[in-house]
Amino acid sequence: MIHEWHNSDLSPLLSLWLESTIYAHPFIQERYWHDSEALVREAYLPYATTWVWQEHGELEGFISVMDGQFIGALFVRPALIGRGIGKALMNHVKQRYDWLSLEVYQKNERAVKFYYAQGFRIEESAWQEETRHPTWIMNWQAGQTP
Image (cartoon, rainbow, N blue to C red; front, side, top):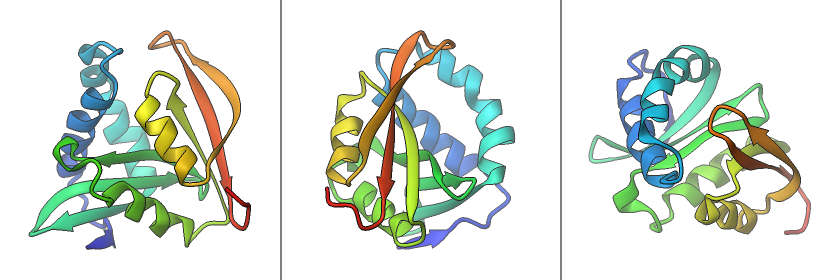
């Protein structure tokens, strides 16, 4: 079900990213995400290693790691949240890296709790000027006790 994405057509990833990111961030204007799509398509996804969860040929979730350490994306189709897809994708990358970092909006409490349950710990806070919202920088290291 999980495999690395090698398709040069990023539109399925972008479609799932847009649907999921709007759902996960109701505190940010939807227009911001539409305006960010080109940046995700041109500057992030092509330079990340991405693994996808597919069922019956349908893309249901994906995780992207940039620079061998930064989780730039972890998205699951909203209707399937809570079914273990995000955890499976996270475990998949944790088997391949010894240290991972990510940035998550502080108001995205569901994601913060999820990452904490996966062994990530808050290291610092940051401010996203574009959205005018604070974030947490969270890290995970292999072998650390959760």
